Length: 122
Image 1 (cartoon, rainbow, N blue to C red):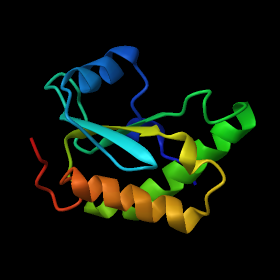
Image 2 (image 1 turned 90 degrees about the vertical axis):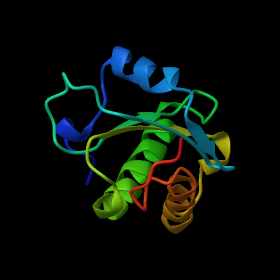
Image 3 (image 1 turned 120 degrees about the horizontal axis):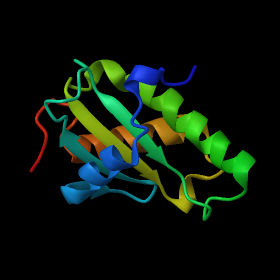
Image 4 (image 1 turned 60 degrees about the horizontal axis):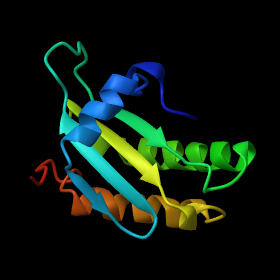
């Protein structure tokens, strides 16, 4: 099951705001950007934005990757603190990987960023 609409980042301005903080952490599969939500955002939970470029492959392959990332994120969402915007950029190596590997690597990069333990790194 995918991420529900209130939990998604859709506006370009929100993506740009998160990217502008230059707070990123990466591994071979993902780059994760994070930022606290601005006060004008009226949600009390985390939001996620996914970026899968054409380097990954054709449209059906990019959708496949997005679905796997979304499913993996939903499985670990209980460990994500509220009031946080997270943008996940998929790298080409993620294409064709099994769900378990995608979830493990996503957990790894979120842990590097300090997001899983609730203490976001600066």
